[in-house]
Image (cartoon, rainbow, N blue to C red; front, side):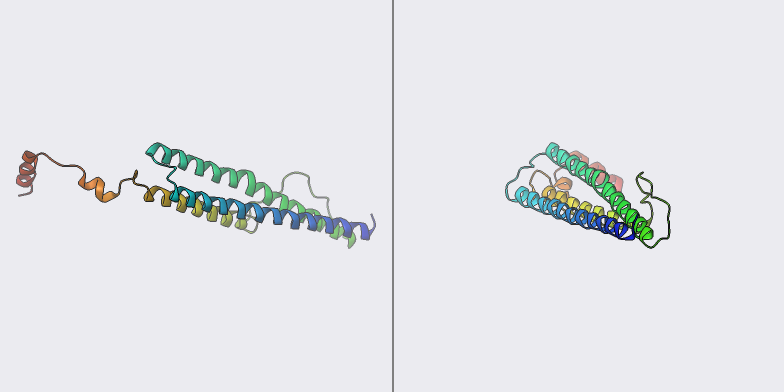
Length: 168
């Protein structure tokens, strides 16, 4: 292979990386803004009204986070790493270093350098989902406050006397 061809292939790998990164951020911002829109819509029009619907909302948010982390973030990091390996392979060919050909298997992304972006983006998404859930949960009258729960239980008059006698 000529060095010029190897350089062109390395540039294609870099271009693939940049295109994928653009899509990654578009999808991230789309997800994050849709969480905000859903929260605003739920606060202005009470859609979630019962404890069962709060449980369903929690499960839906949990599934969104799992799909985001396992089916989007991890595979895209592996694709980024694969593009990087192939780019370096072709650049080494152009420089006549003769490296080993990278494997077509998924690259290992267990190091902190590769996982830091995944962890930070998943953490930010988790924070948005948690904030959305708590805003919706605590803004709705179906979720009683702690003060109301404590004072909603009353004892019969005879029980007060028994409790006072035990405290003495």
